Length: 137
Image (cartoon, rainbow, N blue to C red):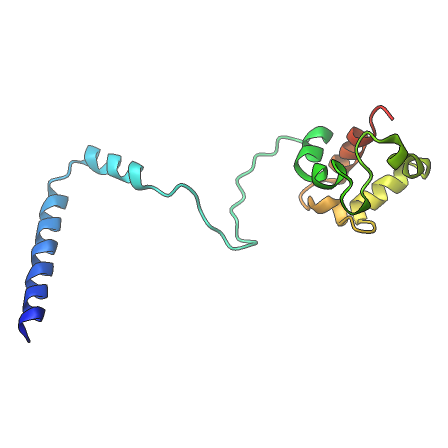
């Protein structure tokens, strides 16, 4: 063993010894405070392996579903989406009937993916979002 290896060995031994001595002198209260300060701010899960922790609070309001999922396209007309509140965009679609609107929204139509990408939305929540978008037309 050469001199640099000996120095590193002594250094790591001293470090290990001082760390062990410090760890023995930390009270449970200090340990808990340290653990709280260094705890992770979030968790990473692989797709499909997320823990289910949501409480069932019932169906979401149409405005909430719209605000989270629909507004990205229906707020500005991306990909030919009818703009919320624009009677000219919605007129022909509404004339086909609400059942057709619901079918297209739930199953997807043209550039719109099924349920507008909200795969955890119920059919009733999608219908509520449609009603929110055409409200007042």
